[in-house]
Length: 267
Figure 1: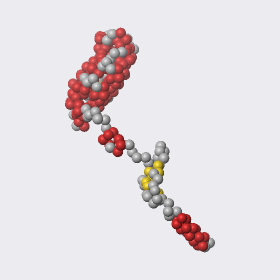
Figure 2 (figure 1 turned 135 degrees about the vertical axis):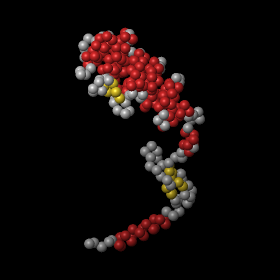
Figure 3 (figure 1 turned 135 degrees about the horizontal axis):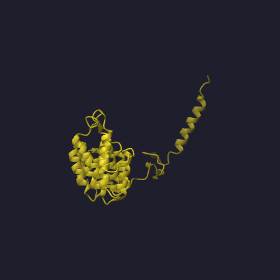
Figure 4 (figure 1 turned 180 degrees about the horizontal axis):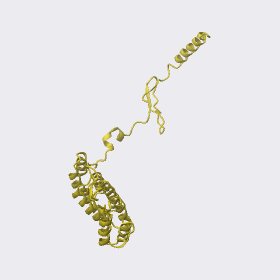
């Protein structure tokens, strides 16, 4: 093992002390709180004689020093939206639907958006009925959001009912499924929503979830739509009725009833 170069190290130390003595009369610069930044270069304020100076970034603007200055003076909390959130936190579906209906009547688009989101979260026939007027809202963004939300609600309802394997009657899919009363409300909702949309394209967004329902639910809905809609919307409903009944030529209520009877389980 080589010995350490003690002599050379001593020379270096002496030279260092001499250099420090020569620089003793110059000012001392003490770095304080230097934080690297890609967008700015640290500044140095020069002092006189032995005065210590700080090296750091440019001072913060006054507005950034006072955090309250970042909040607009006219900023206010929407108490009605806050109340809606309180109902959501409490899982109070009845109050959520009532408050959402109130907010949907507002001229404030943000209020309407919050209301629609809340109704989607509830996703019951009552929530869907509260959403129906928004499908006709004159604001294009609101009506577009409402169509998407209604499609989600109807898709949720479609998972909550099945046909009894013995009788073919519609029953709740599980303990959280639709009751007999709620099933009737779901029927009314589907018809009302489909009647409310403005065009065939929006109608199709609501008919697609209907395809997931049992025939003895979807066929009566489609028959009701064929009898009440007009123009392109009626044509779209008739197209879905034809597909749902396996293209067996069903075009009206009487033919639909006969078709459904033929689909019932045989004893």
